[in-house]
Image (tube, rainbow, N blue to C red; front, top):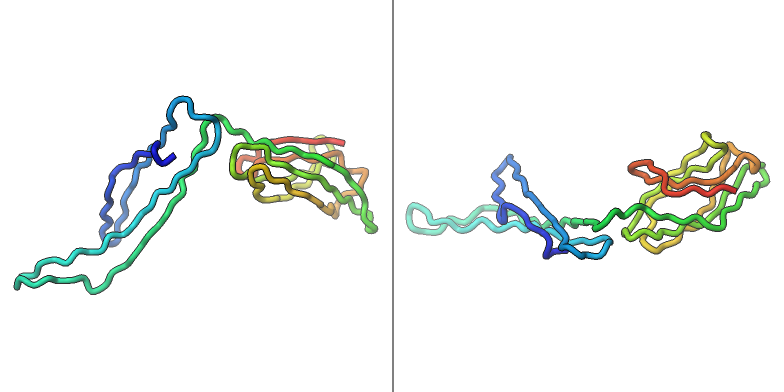
Length: 174
C-alpha cells in the first residue's frame, strides 16, 4: 500500500508550543483485489543544525530531543463486512441452576481483526450483553459464558454485534 500514499507537506517544521497538519491521501489502483492493506508513515526528528555565530564560530544547540514515531495506516478495498460464524452452540446448567452457554466463533472476514460483543438472547427482544474483544483473521474463539441471571430454559440463542457500531454481524438460535 505504500506506493498508493501521497502526503503533504513532505517536511514539517513544528515550532515550540505549536502544531502542524499532515494530509494523507490513499488511493488503491483499479483492479486491486478486495481485502485489507496497510503501510507505515514514519515521523523522524531532524537535529537542529549548527548555526554560524556573530564571531564566525559555530553555535550548537544545548539540548536535543530525538523522536521517531511510526503510524500504521490501514485501508480496505471493497465493502469488507464482518463475517463471524457461530458453531457448536449449546446450553447447559451448572449446579447453581445458572445457564452455561458455549460455542465457537470463527472470523471469516478479510480484516485482521473484528471487535465484537456477544448477546445471549432470552427472547426476541431481551438479552444480556458481554463485550468479548478482538478476534484475528481466520482465528476461532471458544466461548463459555455463565449467565448468572438466566436459566437454561431462558436461553434462545446468541447474537454477535460489532463493538463500535453495534450492528448485528450474525445470530444463531436453538
